Structure formats: C-alpha cells, structure tokens
Length: 341
Length: 296
Image (cartoon, rainbow over all chains, first blue to last red; front, side, top):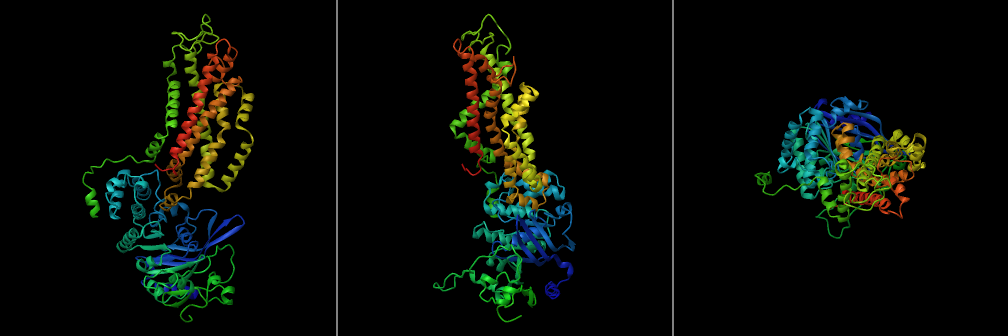
C-alpha cells in the first residue's frame, strides 16, 4: 500500500496544494436485506486543479456510487464504510450534514447523468437558479434571476432571457444539459463531477457539451471528474484516466499512456470494444464475454478473472494490488499486458 | 451565439402557455363527459355556496297549510310533509352535502398527507411504523369505524364530518408515501441534493407539486364516496339531524309519502345521483388529464 501511495503522489508533481481532491481507500456498500452489495471497494483517486480525470467502466462498476460517495450523498441503505475523502485539504468524512451542504453545489458540484430528467418538471429554469444562488450566495430573487440569465448565456443557451421563464419540457436535451451545467457552475465550484453528462444526447450535441466542459475547466482552473463509458470521450477530453471494474480501480494512467500501453487485460478488452472505421469489414465486432459481477461477497481474487483470457490460479486466489508500472501508470493485475511490472 | 442574435429582437411568435397545469387543462378539455361532469360538479358547488341567496324560503320554514303540494309557481318543486319548499330544501341540501364532501377529504388529507410524506421521504423506521399503522387501520373498514365513533360520541353534521375524515386518512397517507418513495430517487431530486437545496425545500417545493396530481385526483374521487357515505348515515338517522336539510335524510322522510308525492323522495335521490356521478367523472377526467405519461 505504501509503495502504491508513493506512486500516485509522484505524478502530482506541482506541489501538494494543487491537489484538490484526494480519496484514499474509499469503500461504499449497500445493505439490502440479507445481501450486501459492495459497490466501491477501496477507491484511490486524486484530482488536481485544472485536471480532467476520466473515470471509465461498464454499468454497475461503481462509477456513479463513487461520485455520490465523494459528494457525501449516499443515502441509506447505502453507507460509506471506510476511507478518506480530502477536499482542499479538509477531511469530508464525518463532517456534519450542515457543513457538507455548504460545500455541495458551492465548492463541489455535480452534473447529473440524465439531463432530460434532472430538471424538476414543475419548476421553471429560473426557479432552479434562484434556489441555488439564494441558498449559497444569499442573493435576492431578482439578482439570482439575472445571474441565471447571465449563466445561461455563458453556457450558450440561445435567448436566455425568455428561456429562464420556461419549464424543462420546453427545452431540448442539449439545452437542458446546458442548464444543468450552468446550475452546477452557478457558484463557481472548485471541483466539478460530471456523471455521464452526454449519454442522453446525440453526437453533435455531445461534442458541443464536451467543448463547453473543456472550456470551463480551462478557464476556471477547476478540477473535473468525467464519468463515462465512452473511451472516445476520454481520449479527447481528459488528461488522466481511471478504469473501474466491480468497484475497484483496475488501471490508472495518463490518457496518452493508457491508450498507447494499456496494461490491464480489462482495459485492453475495453479498447478492443471500440469500433474502428479503419478495421477490415470481415473482422467481427469485439465484445468482452460475460457480465460484470454484482459484488455481494468479498472474495479474494481479481474480480475480472472469470472473464479474463490471461487469468491463472493466482488471479483467482489473490487480489492484485494497484501497483505502479511506470511513472503515473498503475494497474491491478498479476499478469499485465506488455511485460511484467 | 449567432442563433441568439437571430432570436433576440422582439419575437413575433406568441408565447404558448406551456406549464404543466396548462397542458393538463388542454387534455381535460377534450374529454366531453368529464367536461360536462365538471360543469355540473362546479354548479353544485356554486349552488351550495350561494344557498341563502338562491333559496326563496328557509330550509326550516314550514307551511302546514300546504303539505305535500305539487309543483306550483310559489313552490316550483312542490313542498314536503311539513309544507317546506322542496326547491329551497334541495339547495340547502346541496350545501350540507358539499360541506361534508369537501371537509371529509380535507381532514383525511391533513392527517394522511404529512404522515405519508414523512414515511416516503425518510423511509426506514418511520416508514415501518407508518406501514404497520396503516395495516391496522386497513383491517377496520372506514365506514364501520366512523359508525363506531358516531355510536360512541353521537351523531350530527360536525361529528359525521370529523369521524368520516379521521377514518379515511389511510388512503391519503398511502398515496403520499408512494409518491414520495417514487419521486425521492428521481434524478431531479438527486440534482437538487447535489446543489444542496435544503431537505424541506425538496420535500415541499420539488416533490409536492409533482406528487399533487394523484393526490388531487384521489381527493376528488373520494368526494362521491363521501357523499354516498354521508347520505347513508343520514338515511339511517345517524347523520344530519332535523331541521337541517340533507339529501340523505330527505329520502328517509319522503319515503313514507312515495305514493302520495313521489317528488319528495325522488328529488334528493336525483341530487345524490347527480352529485356522485358528476364528481366521479370529474375525478376520472382529472386523473387522465394529470397523468404525466399521457401526452397531448
């Protein structure tokens, strides 16, 4: 463990204070009657200001739960059972809800998964802005509404003065996502978590939203976590990647490194799943066989072993630690692709 | 950015009304049965509200010289066995009926809604206790419970209202709980939590309006049942007492003179039927109109 921490520290070169979010050994589980689902099992992640971290993984790999855990928004029957979440040097776990509330939406904001359903259908766009701005910045209703218009203009919503009086269903999906982004940015947060911000949008709108996202990170110098299952998005809009599987980190590296030298067989599999126009027509579309497990038991061994081509007995018996392979590149695998660690 | 420039200067296109309630009205309007029922239902309500202005005679004003008279200019619907003007008594009867019909669901909502909201939103032990309580109350038929309370504490208009109201809270609690349970994990609620909107605001400003549709529908659907229950108690002599005009009691009183003057019992029957049916269809129409899964 100590060695692994060392490895992660090294890559955050420009001083300790640049680290915005530092998560160590985060565990979150849900108790559902007799069964316990271990959704996140020892997550280590850090984000620096101005850095865009991509978190990829299949559905159910714990990406969203991890995001909610960081935001302190896990509700019963879920519980964060272990680990540290340091945000701007402050430990968040154990903070009373009233203190978390002051951070949430103000210093750390989240863009929820589905823009189509994330706006309350009975409230106007303006009301959403008023709530946030009044809550965190104590603005008057009028001032909040004006600021809302300004923010909408900033995120490129056309005709913001009349849009601010509209209900959500009058806006297109892309516009709704822009509104969600504007809401998240309303109090100028330091950390922005975007949970699959583009899944419900069509491709051209996706590109626009992601460009907007890039612009906000670059201008504001804020740290951003982009949760997605789209490796294409990660390749062009992130600086660093974290690959999650069954609630664990499988591999983490800079984007360039990960795409050039993927070490974990799971990452390799994910990359092979990306369809390429250049591939010959005859080649069949690649898929990783099997389904990701729903982790209800803590058994030793690599969670990916049952689906892994390279799995050996050791993989089935011992859990591989997240070991550094090169500077800023770690993988949790006994038999990494491309040479031994 | 360029699109904004095109759209900005004085839009000639008229803004469409587009709120949730406006769309619901657009859907409601197309259901003719519901529309007519709604008009009748509201007419009954208006008659009830304006009873003293509309009725030419007081509901207790007797004229023993003109007992069980047929329709005439002075008494368009005739008189009852004590020579009271039937039209005036029908109008005042509507007032009694509507008082009960609106207050009973209101009391049910006042008790049931907060309980359901707390259970649905907080879940856990609060939800568990509420559910057990609901189960216990479900075992006792509400009408029977009200009957028991009336037997214990006596009859009369206000007792009937109070007891029917108290015994009907489960339905409201169940609906409120179900709505909050379904809505509390919706993404707009998660989004609101992510922006640290306080709990009470989420409960009352974000979720309540979204839960209002089914609550309102249930409320209105309870009206005909309440009218019927109250008429039943009054018919049995457990509800409204003399001389207050009430349709249920008017049937009991008029029943004896069915062969002499059928109108005396028939009119309140029509009144009850009309009120019950109109509020039923009104409620059904509202349910369809407020169903968010139905588009225009």
